Image (cartoon, rainbow, N blue to C red; front, side):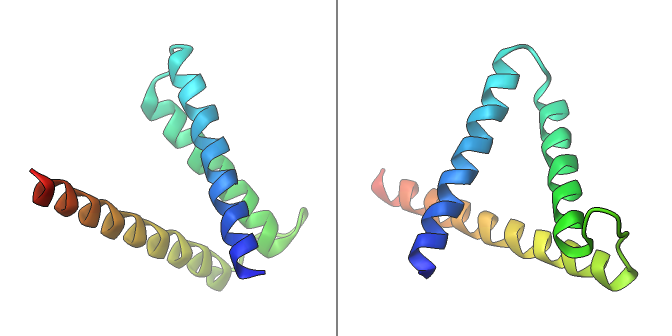
Length: 90
């Protein structure tokens, strides 16, 4: 089941990136696309934690911010490992 969730996560992420690249290729600035994706993600994360009508409490906001921080930390660590692997291949 965990692998299935991982595969779903990967597929969803790739779809979002594809959509972002489509928007960029339509002439929308990459900074605008990035901020829009972040805003949409924040709206959905808030919905996930607090529901459609609820607002986030301070602890809910902290919970979401920590989840984003952990995700970015993991992504940066992956990029560093990929960069090191490329350098070793040269």
